[in-house]
Structure formats: C-alpha cells, structure tokens
Length: 83
Image (cartoon, rainbow, N blue to C red):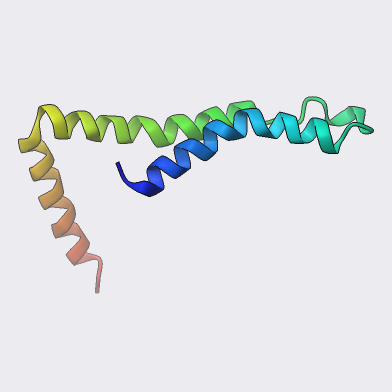
C-alpha cells in the first residue's frame, strides 16, 4: 500500500483513543468538554479512506485485467487535464 494511505489510516485509528485522552488531560476543569470528541467524523474519515483502498486492492488481486484497464483510463484522463 501507499505510505500516505497507511499513515492516514494509522493516524485516524490513533485519533479515536488519543483525542479523548488529550481532552481528559487538558480540559479537566471544563465540564462542557466531556462530549466534544467527534467519533462519527473520525469513523467516517477512516471508512472513506479504507473502503476505496480495499476495493482497489481486491480488484488488483482478483481481477488484474480490470486494474490495467482502469489504470489506462486514468492515465488518458490525466493527459487531458494538463491543458
């Protein structure tokens, strides 16, 4: 996998535990901050990163002919956007 995808996935997973910990440490005197951790957005970010990558890995593993076709189409479109 790409290093950027792995790093994004790791940081998103770690955010689920580190954000509440840091909020607890830094905001002990503020009772209104107890429910401030955006778990839904963190999980959504993780899903939106890992699902397309997983689909791409599965396509590349089980249907490499489709992977070559998609790569070819993407390369053709990349050349058209460089006007």
